[in-house]
Amino acid sequence: MTWSGCGREVRLVTTVGQALRQFKRGNEMSLRTGAEYLTSLKDGRRVYHDGRLIDDVTIEPGLRNTALTIAQYYDMQNRPELEDLLTYETSDGERAHLSYIEPRSIDDLRRRAAAFGAWAEVTGGLMGRAPDYMNACIMAIGNAGHVFGMNDDRFAKNAYDIYLRCRRNDVCMTHTFINPMVDRFTPIVDQEKFINAGIVDRNSDGIIVTGARMVGTLAPFADENLSFGAPGNLQGYGDEIYALGFQCRVDHPDLKWICRDKLDGEHSHFDRPLTGRFEEMDALAIWEEALIPWEDVFIAGDTQTHNMALPGMKFFQSLGHHVLVKNVAKTRFLFGLAHLMAESSQISQFVNVQDRLGDILMWLNTMEALAIAAVEGGEVNPANGLFYANENAIQASLRLYPEVYPRIIDHIIQLGGGGYVSLPQEATLELAELVIDRYYKGASQKSDDKVALFRLAWDICGTGWGGRQELYERFFFGDTQRMKGINYQMYDKADAVDMVARILQPPQDAQRVAWPQWIASGLGGSDG
Image (cartoon, rainbow, N blue to C red; front, top):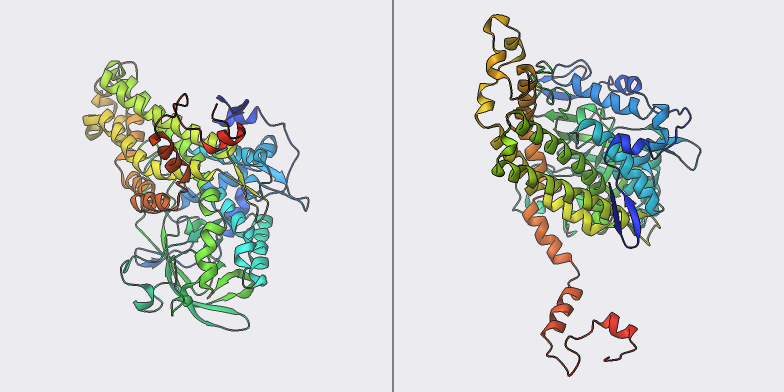
């Protein structure tokens, strides 16, 4: 699709096919493969589920399927015909996934968006924590030396070195940014010490960390964990022990991962087509007197740096760009699903159904428009010379989607209606003596096809995995109500207020409306 604005044509890459047509076939590259990725997970990591330590996530029922999906991500970037779509040549002559790029132009943002979009199209936007998400995050960390080094230069160097190590080794990352939900009211300094991860001690080798953080999405399938961010606005009166930012191995000997329930019951693909491929798993990280070497630390007891970290690294613009592109693909998947469901029984002819389908389409168009604006309105950060996605477009998308997603899911529930509660399993369909083809077929579909479609819809809106997807979208990037309030408080309101003040001014002779200052200046102060 194209969009014309500001005197130029802009292209939004919306499918892998469209993206491929914009990039030439490249040469062979040496990047991490799926097989190499799977081998790296056999490292003795301490992942706990249902009262036991999981020996190997690559063979563990309920987890192994997701490991294979992520392996496909790494194999995809090694396909020669996708080289220029997914990778770039770094300054040291290596190939790296474009999610690691340090954007120095709007075109770099376009290329990164296309790479984000390729995997999102493959998965229907159903992997919010695909490896490219944290790749963009660690790039932002590495290039925020102006923040991390404000009081100690070594932390700026550490941040960039961590980024380089991750890029050069194609590291798969999880993150733990949030304190456990024990007490959200009492100031952290007045709570029991080291429930929240904090610095117990430090020595010449590094800092000693004890406590917990969440939500380690993808942790069982990652190589390293990035931890920083929470809680905000430390005061420095005893709470500086919680000002810390560091990277560590998922298999750190003094780190445990506590998993929620598994949602993949390893049903057949027909019965659970989504759950069996995209169960990312979430986990609580618990450090117990864990030594984090100094070279892996970029915040240590400095509340000023801690409080400046998120805005200084352009947190929302960096990670939110991936989220927005993912949400374009996810909304397109949901729109296609809703359309096919309506067509299956010809309810698409009803105006109330068309209203629901049109509503989903409106949000798809909105997300696509915001994705264009995020790139084409990209802004340079004078602190490091890098380009970041447009903050207003990113914030709008991040605050809209938690409200939009449940609304779309409700449409899909309404479209399926009672059809969901009568769905047979694949094995039941195979019982020929039941002659059920007659009773489960669609207006122009065989029963197998219609049941498969409705089971796909049920997987996204009615299963435990689907419920986790909705929870994820509702609370992704913070509580929406609170974040809207923060956006309002932080927004520069001067232009909006000035406009109201001008409109309130009474007409002056022939001048019916007062000129804005920027126009008046261009007129040389003239009233004409």
